[in-house]
Image (tube, rainbow, N blue to C red; front, side, top):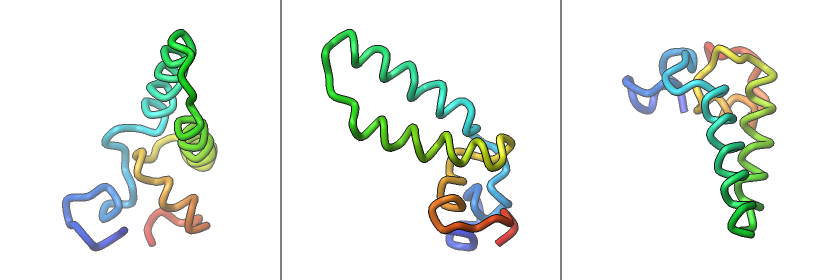
Length: 78
């Protein structure tokens, strides 16, 4: 949430710290590994959907920008 912590990405327009692209890549790798162990990935599936949607909005943002997507905020300065 913007303003909650002055050091948080949300207080700096969600500029990339750990990018959305890296989060999506890591989730895809985790899902591949889970499948080899026949492990359910329902939570990872839901997370991947959220991160992918946020990535499609603005690939330059930090992974925490899923907040913007979940709150339907289009301007990362809010």
